[in-house]
Image (cartoon, rainbow, N blue to C red; front, side, top):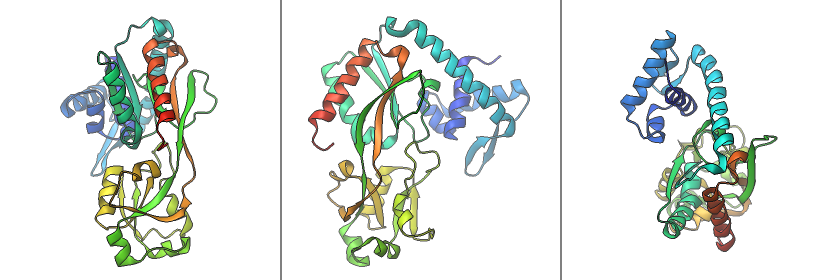
Length: 295
């Protein structure tokens, strides 16, 4: 019979549609993850996933199992958090958020915290799918606001907007947009996988130029790759203003034209609110934002 880890692996493969991403999260080999999935399929005598050229997705029987496994993991974590809570003597803190927020803020926050607390180990998990904290082993997440959830506590961390950026070479070749309607004449590099991304609406610039997506020259689920492609003169891309400060090879296009405001919240289980390490790290993050003028 499958153990809890097997169900957790199944859950994460279903969430990320990726065996390799799940292997990274659980520090396992791809072979070990595949073996766990095969064991589940053999145990239930049904195909749980459909393998395609584009990756892996749930079969109908897998969707049924996913619903039950989600509740199983949430209930396990609830019991674990509720009965251990602040009794846990932790020297490891696990944090989950998007790749872009790891690069934008969490890497700097974590490095500074580790210098002050060298005995503490930080485990950082980056994923660009919708984050369900109670279904993970993480202690804390950075994510959008969750409405009406009595087992989750959230504290606003910071808010940010995106602007449009391009390389000087691209603008020299294609011209600099003077107004929003000029964007119809330009090429765009956008963040992909919008339907699963926690903040959604990654293609917001296209809302202003109609339904025609023919001017999208690249769709990438990596902010670093978007920056590289923009620096190479491939097109215009959307970046947070904080992130763009570090990109000397890109210039702002239409400075008065920005995305909707995105809000990021520090998120954790109410049953972990009194864990000293968690409280200490949250205080550190808030102090970092307060003292850092780029936010």
